[in-house]
Every structure is written in C-alpha cells, then in structure tokens.
Amino acid sequence: MSLRYSILASGSTGNALYVESDEHSFLVDAGFSGKQMEALFQQIDRDISKLSAIFVTHEHSDHIKGIGILARKYKLPVYANEKTWRAMESNVGVIPAEQKFIFDMESVKSFGSVDIESFGVSHDAAEPMFYVFHQSGKKLVLITDTGYVSDRMKGIISNADTYIFESNHDVQMLRMGRYPWNIKRRILSDVGHVSNEDAALAIGDVVGDRTKRVYLAHLSLDNNMKDLARMSVAQTLQTKGFIVGEQFDLYDTDPKIPTIVTAV
Ligand SMILES: [Zn+2]
Ligand SMILES: [Zn+2]
Image (cartoon, rainbow, N blue to C red; front, side):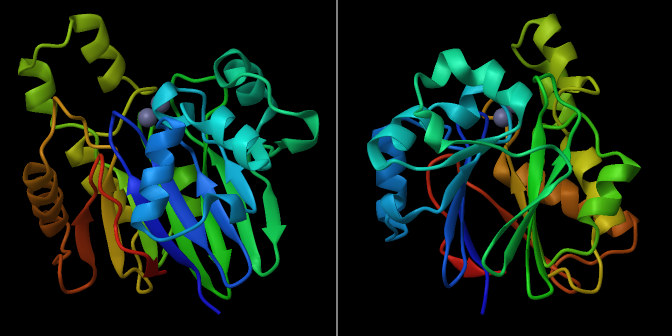
C-alpha cells in the first residue's frame, strides 16, 4: 500500500494537490477554472470523476475557483469547516446539500487506510486549515498560506516523509517591488504568507529522519523566483546544519505544470 501525490499546480495564481491511495483519490483545493482543472488531471492521466473527496483549505480564490464547477459536474463530495463553507458560499455557487460535508479544524477523517488530519494556520481567511495525509506510517504534509509557522503547527507536521511547504516571497523583492504598501504589509504580516527565509527556518525545525522530499510551494509570481527560492532556502538550511541533497531533496513547484505522480 502506498500513498501517491501530484502537486497539480502551485502559486499565487492557483493551487491544487492530488493525493491517491490504492482505493481512494483526493483533491485538496481547486484554484483554477473547471477546464483548467480537467487539463491538469489529463496531464497526470487521472480521472476527476473518481475522486472520493475534495478538501478545501480556505476561501481565497486561488484555492476555490473550480470547486463549485467540479462538485456539480462530477457530483463530488466537498469537505470544509463551517466558517469556510459560509465564507465561500457566494463564490462557489450552489452545491447540493448531500455533497457538502463538514471537516472541523484539528480533526481526522478516514477513507479506508488513509487518515486525513486538519490543522489551523495563521492567515487572513475565515478559518484557514491545511492537511496531513497519513497511511501505514507514511506522512504527507501540505502547508501554505500562513503568516508564520507556530510551535503548535510544527508539532503536528514534524518528521513527515514529504512536505509541500509555502515559500511565498523573497522579502527584499517584495519590499522593492511594485505592490502597494498595504498589500506588502498584508503579505509580510502574521496572517499573510511565509517568506523563503522563514520557510527555511521552519523546515529546519520540522524535518526528521523520515523526511525525503521538500517541495517549495505557493511561490509569488511577482516577488519570488524558483531558483532564488531554492537557493535561499538551501542556504539558510545550511546555516542550520542541513545539507540539501544529502538528508533530503528540495524541489520547486510550478504554477501550471503538475509534478509527476510520486509515492510519499
Ligand atoms: Zn493562496
Ligand atoms: Zn490564501
């Protein structure tokens, strides 16, 4: 038995993560149009209609754009906490009541041998939460859209096999960039997004002997670059005594191209 995943796309323009076991398949967020989501599934040669569930992290449009369309077209069950349901209701349109499920923050749902655990993050949405997938001792962590990584979050996500970790911006690029000051302040705040450097510090705190892969995710289109993110995260990790490529590998993610389906 194994858990497999593909980061379908990740970035400030849209996010979607595909996860499957031998019996079930899941989607976390659908931050693209229905057509774009279908194209992403085609690229990994998987069938949207077979999904057991869609889990929603929070109501920002780069996470929910395709939720309503996919739910209606393929009659898929959608899971979110109550506050997120309320906050996204007007943007996802009508989803039949029998397809709407509550997934409370800091709780676990089981689908066969897969346990999905939710945990809260610090972000300017109604009740944002992310997910840890567990199966037969393996652990896959998705954490983006958080202003910082608290000790409580670190406890929940520690020593996973695979991390998909926010590395949103380079602080210097953001400060010098073209965004208006109020937006810069929001991104840099405790309820905004994690910078390359803060990502590296948090990654250094949570990786363990099980950790094999860390993907840098939710990169800002305007305030980051793949090479810069990888380099600065690797550099900061080095100052903490980690050698990337030896203990674990570091990968980037693309706003449009899925990663190949990989075992956790
Ligand atoms: Zn986002
Ligand atoms: Zn967000």
